[in-house]
Length: 125
Image (cartoon, rainbow, N blue to C red; front, side, top):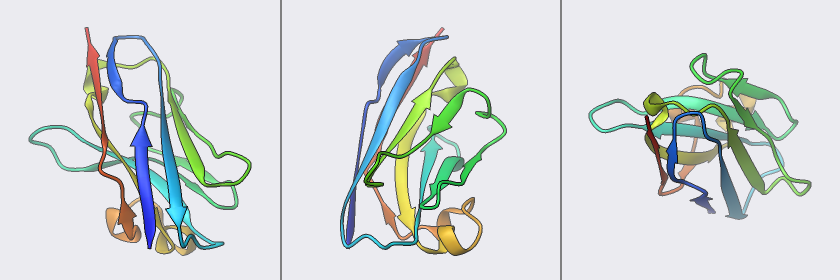
């Protein structure tokens, strides 16, 4: 079992920055990927960014150049640095963990086995 806890969400203005963090604990694997997804009211959950344990990163086109996913030295804390936030970035952001996301594509939600409960990000204009 893997437990994920997101933190760092809040209310900011357009153009501001936020740093989300995903803390993982439990029986983590040596080969995995951590992804960030977001879901706005009335919309489908969408991929934001992911990082594999080997350090490879992936980004949605909508956030590329603005968001940066990384990892701490131990690999159990995954931050998502969000710069140049826009109102359309407003959503609940979820952290996800999975092995299939490492061995295969990290983009689909089905590649992840564990999910956090989300942290709200609201960007006002």
